Length: 513
Image (cartoon, rainbow, N blue to C red; front, side, top):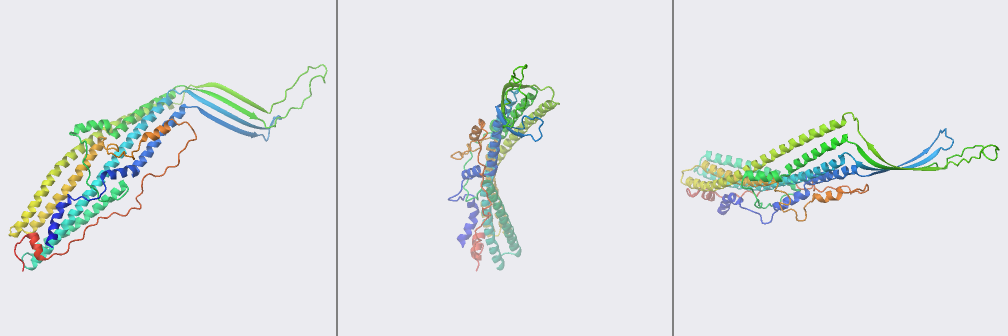
């Protein structure tokens, strides 16, 4: 029993160093989120839709070929010669000049594709940051549960020993009440910690798509900057959100050129052909022949009326806008206003990125200092608790002093666990803000890397009207079948005898008969 009690007292310190033998790694969690998170897979689908705007816009500058077929039968026709016909026509139009609308429209679409790629990178970085936070939250909350569980075990033994000493008159009812109150608070804190752990696990499932399983400590973060200014300089070149805003501004500038093209002429070459067949409905008119049967009149031959006819024409068509009711100037002003909005949004994103980088850097550095201070606090509180117990054994400290020392040690241990979590999350957030926390940076490209250029290159030059793809199926995994998460704890220790409790918790103050 004495060995069990000593293990309870040491469990809280060992909690911070404990690591499971077989566990999930942070890289595995990030890889699962990269493959299965619906926010990422949805953004990929959005980018593919944006890719399609390029061939859609390019189609405006390509030849247009159309055909038309008509069958007509007259039911009340004053023309006695035909009352039924079938017509087939074909029209080929080749744009020659569109005032630059197609040219600048394609450039605007390409810029929006580049903005979409940067947005996808930013989405991946955001989900990675959330996944790292969720991963570290589970590790933190599991440690806090173990710390609170160990504290409940210690306070349970304290309460039993205090009650036994009260029975022999060594302590007062006040001491017993203090021990019971502190145990009740510790039990409440344990349940709160368990609830927080369950919440962290469910958040992990939401992001990663599967339940956490004995998570390993994360690897060290690479390439963290020495100064906040260095971090900002990198972020201004590499932050995906800022790159996306920059490309959207360029696209808006091309939109102005497209709108201005509405004032310019449009020229196209065309070919039109048609064929009509009267389907045998042409009636040759009844007439009195003029010729040798009528002496004195000239010999006139009347040709038979054909039952079909065809036509083929080629030409050039020019459309010169003269007055459009003020539509084009309004479109230009609208495009210019949207360009101004894009410019302001670029500055807004730049400000946000700078603030995020500086704040993450400050949080990361502060967390490093908190870790060092908390480590000292844990070690000092461990020594203080031992001293308070020793002083209590000679009557210089009360039970409340011991309870307070134990609580201060627990608080320092929890603070150390939280500081380690905060430091790692802040460091990763800093890398993400710098544009250095993407799939390639994290080593996730081993067979699972999604290359957005593949789809873009496939569809950019397509001209056929008859190509198609199968309907999409979801890439993200569902979590409806996952089990509800839990926060199990080890059972409380068996009740130990008063002699062992007095010896282990308060020292050999006096023998108990």
